[in-house]
Amino acid sequence: MRWYQSAERYDAVTDSWTLIAKDLNPLQGPALTILANGDVLVIGGLSCGHCGGNNVELYDASTGTLTRRGFMRQERGYHTATTLTDGRVLVTGGAQGAAAPWAPSAGPYATTELYDPAANTWNAGPPMSVGRALHTATRLADGRVLVVGGASGAGSATAGVMLIERGRFIVQARLVKLYQGCSMLRCCV
Image (tube, rainbow, N blue to C red; front, top):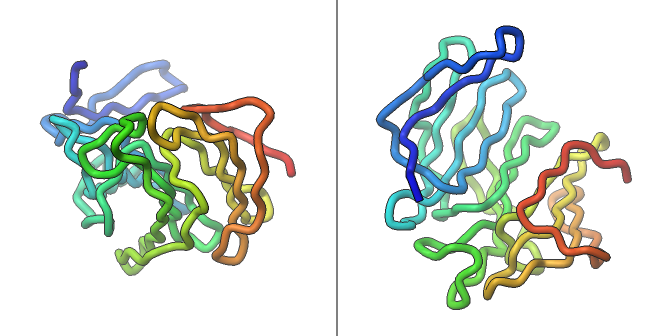
C-alpha cells in the first residue's frame, strides 16, 4: 500500500486539481467534515505502520492553508465525523490504536467524542451500543444523526442502525443488507 503525504483541492468549475499541502503525516482512514464557516476538519486516521492517530488539522478554505488544531481524546482510524446543527462535531467509532477495524483481536470503538471548534475542546460523547468502523454517520434535516452499518471486528459487518437525538442513541434496528464502507449522501426518515 502506498501512503500519500499531500492534500489536493478539486475545482469543479475548471475541472482541475491543485496541490494545497505536501509533506504531511501520511494517513489512512481519517474523517473529514465541513464546518459551518466552510473550513474542513481532518480528524485522526492511521499513520505509517498502522499507528493510530488523534491529530486534528484544519483546512482554512479562505487561505488554502492546513494547520494543526490539537488532538482528540482517543486515537482513531476508520471513524466518522459529522457536523451538528449547533456547530459541534460528533466523532463516532473507529479502529482501536494500531489495529485495523477488521482485525480479530481488536474490535472497533463504541465510544464517541464531541468537538467544539469555537473553544477548540474535546469531550466524551454518548456511547454506542456496539463498536463500529467503516460505518456512516449522517446528519438528518431535523438535526438527528443516523449511524449505519460498518465493521464490528473479526471481519464481520455490522447490521445495525442507531439514531442519536438530544445527546443519546435512541433507535436501534437491523438492516436487511449489510453495508461496510458506504456513504450516505441523503436520507429521508
